[in-house]
Image (cartoon, rainbow, N blue to C red):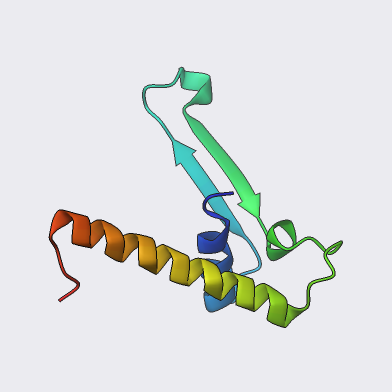
Length: 83
């Protein structure tokens, strides 16, 4: 779930119908090293939701701004700038 907005934006901006989320950890046992999950927008925004498209976009934008705030906070703590 921590990557759902990244996946959703990737699909919405690119016009894709699906996206494969891949996680890999070489230190895991061989049969657990890679996990691939195919996601669609319906997976992220279930049809059972009563939210409108505008509600979904507003929620997505809120997550983008939260990411930016966190990112710039990390930069400030490290003494870096976006310049």
